[in-house]
Image (cartoon, rainbow, N blue to C red; front, side):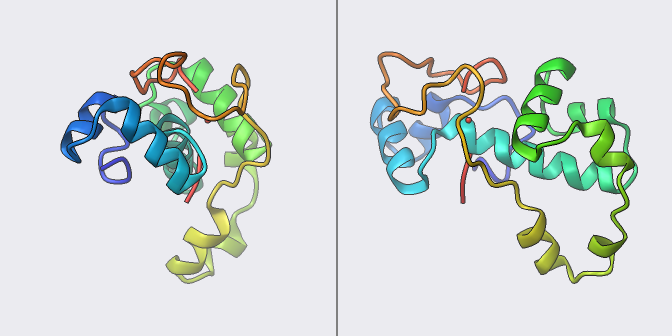
Length: 144
């Protein structure tokens, strides 16, 4: 659901209901399976899709809105944290080598991989009582 509906405003309660789990149980199981919170996974997918749009020539603002981010500043900060460069510099960089690759290699090669937790997060296991059940840009960090 996250992979398919990444551009929609998703929340843990809605996703958990689809799989017949409580939000807290779903968050724990998701983190155990993917190594990150549902929000982090969602943001990684959004950044992954935005990087493809930027490579195709879309403006940073349009890419931000197309992937469901509501704040350009938060999007740029998250993009920079995950991709290790700003969206503008990523867009300006030559992507000729990527364009020559088969699509399956492009997805694998360009998939964002995090090595540290996002700003404002602890990196500790998800705790339903300390995290908001809302998966939005103001929440927390990625995987697959």
